Amino acid sequence: MRLRIDLRYDGTGFHGWARQTALRSVQETVEEALRTVLRAAEPPMVTCAGRTDTGVHARGQVTHVDLEMDMPTRELLRRLNGVLPEDVAVTAVAVAPEGFDARFSAIARRYVYRVCDEPAAWDPLRRKEVLRVGRPLDVDRMNAAATKLLGEHDFAAFCKKREGASTVRALLAFSWERVAPGLLEGTVIADAFCHSMVRALVGSVIPVGDGRRETDWPATVLAAGVRDSAVTVMPAHGLTLEEVRYPADEQLAKRAQESRQVRGEVHQRG
Image (cartoon, rainbow, N blue to C red):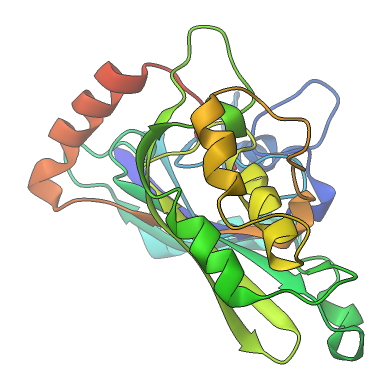
C-alpha cells in the first residue's frame, strides 16, 4: 500500500532532504527510521513534495512511501516518533488516496521567510529560523516589488540552472507582512520551485525594502532571464516549507500525470 506521511523538521543539522554520501539528510533519517520500525533488510524509499536544501526547515512536508505491512497507521506514527531524532517529527500517517504522489500530485507549495529588522526585537531563541538584517525594511515597497513578479514566467534569473530542466513556474503569491514589531514574514506560493528560487526571490526584494534598489528592479532582473550576481540568495535558516496543497482525491492521478509531462524529473526545491 502507499502511505502518506507528513513531517516537520529543523533543517539546521541536515544537508537538505535528499540522501547524500557521508552527509546527514532528512530522507536518509526517515528511511532508516522506517527500516528500524519495520525490521526491514533495506530502507524503503521515501518521496517528498519539496526537496528542501541544506538548512531549510519544514513544518508541512508531505511524503509517500510504498510498503507491505499490517501495522495500524497510528501505531506506525507512534513508533516512528519513538526512533526519530528530536529534530524530525511525524505529524500524520494515512493510507494515501488512489493516484496520490507526494511530489507530482501537488498543486502548490507555500514557503515563509522570516526576517528581523529591529535590533531591540531580536529574539536569540529564534536565531535558527529568523534572519537578522541591519537596516529597517519598508513592507509597502517590498510588496510593490513582489507583486510585479506574480504569474507564470521563466524564472531562470532566480534559479540555479539544471541541464534539461525547465525554469518556467507559476508564482501564485508573494507578499510581506509585519507580524510583530521588528518581525516580517514573506509568504511565497507557487506550483513548484526550482533550486534556490525562493531565497533568490527574497534576496531581490530585501534591497528594495531597505532603499538600496527601486521597486521595479526585481521585475527587471526577471525580464533579463539570466542569473544576476547582484541578487543575493538569502541564508537558508530563515526559510520554512509551511504547506503543500493537493487537489481533490479524484484529481490526484491526473495532476501527477500532468506534472510529469510538464517538468519531468525537475527538483522541487527551496
